[in-house]
Length: 185
Image (cartoon, rainbow, N blue to C red; front, side):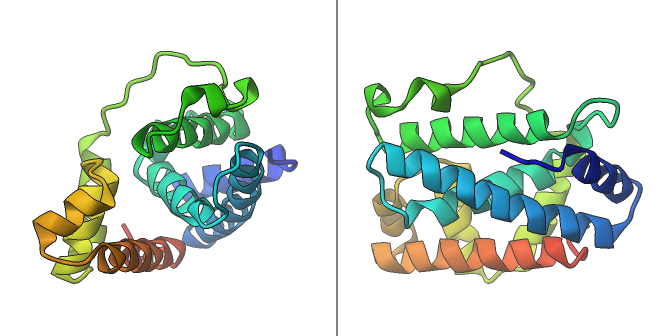
C-alpha cells in the first residue's frame, strides 16, 4: 500500500514529538495512499467510487484519534494498513454488503486489538467536533460515531438524507483541514 516506510515512519515519529509540519505531510501522503487503496478495493466488489472519500476521511480520523497507540519502535505502514482494512470491513458491514462479495485479501488477518480510544483521543475528537456547527456535529456523531444509517440520522436531525450526507462530508473535510494544519490538538 505505501512504498516509503522509512520516510513515513520518521515523519510520524517527528509528529508525535510535536512537529505539526511533519504531521501535515503524513496526513497528506496517507490520504493519497488510502484513496488509491479504497478505490481499488471498492472497484473490485462493484461498489461506487463515491464511497471512497468517506472511507478515506474515516480512516484519517481514526489515525488521528489513535495516533498515541502507534509504537514508534514498530513499522508504521502495517499499523496504517490494519486501520484501513478494519475501516473497510466496518464500512461494508454498516452498508450491509454481503461479506461473500469481499475478496479474501480485503479482509486481512484479524488480530485482537484494544478498540477503546484513550481519554486523550476522545478529548481531541470532542475538540474537533466542537469547531463545527451543531447540525454538522450531530450528523457526524450519528453516522460516523454511532453507526446510524443516513436515513436514521436524517430522521433524528429533522433533515433530509442529502443534507445529512452533505453535512457529514463537509464536516469531515473541515475536521481534516484542522488536523492537517496542526490546529486540531
